[in-house]
Amino acid sequence: MKLTFIGADHEVTGSCHVLEACGKKILLDCGMEQGTNVFENAELPFEEGLIDYVLLSHAHIDHSGLLPLIYARGFRGQIMATEATADLCSIMLRDSAHIQMQEAEWRNRKAQRSANNSVLEPLYTMEDADGAIRHLVPFPYDEIEELCDGIKFRFTDVGHLLGSASIEIWITESGVTKKLVFSGDIGNKKSTLIRDPQYVEGADYVIMESTYGARLHNTEKPDYVGELAAIISETLSRAVMW
Ligand SMILES: [Zn+2]
Image 1 (cartoon, rainbow, N blue to C red):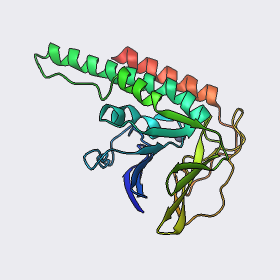
Image 2: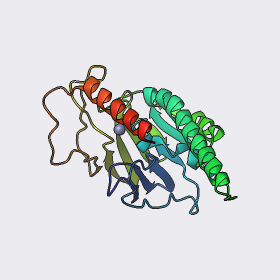
Image 3: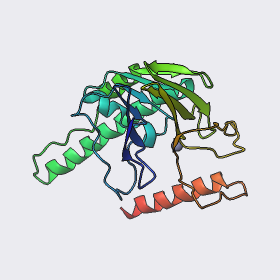
């Protein structure tokens, strides 16, 4: 078994890890780096042979947003996800493709105005998003499933987003079974629509999200409406300044 950390190992976004085991190359998440580029992510391992499978923890773009890119570069394997994650990805990956295409178009128009003839291609297109979506395979929570010879997995509801999961992976090589747990994003608790996180038991190795490591969530219920109003009013005042 070999693990390579591609993204979200120095910073919060761009969750992507490569698990090599039983002769297969498996991505754990395939997320897009978002926000300030603090640490450069490692390159996705396209050149060393195609990826066989993706195990996807949840639909947030920083965990799923590069699925259309690996499709564009030749990935035609299965993307294992929970049922709700597959549904959400069908919306969110197309939305992300739309943003990529609009962004490229905007930059190209801007370049033309400054007599720069270089053409920027979008990171991926709507066809790539549709292609990735066709390879999503939905699974229920709490069932142990066979991925391939020697590898089994199970999704556990971790109450972060509709469909979000921790993934337990059992890997048997040379007659020895080891269990890897990929936590995905966990919680928060007492959310209106989403169940509280379930926990998995036992592991030989854990890849753990630690976004809120050493910090406590505010015990008071956040004022989401007030926060959203403040963001809108700040954005509007900036738009006026432009
Ligand atoms: Zn998330």
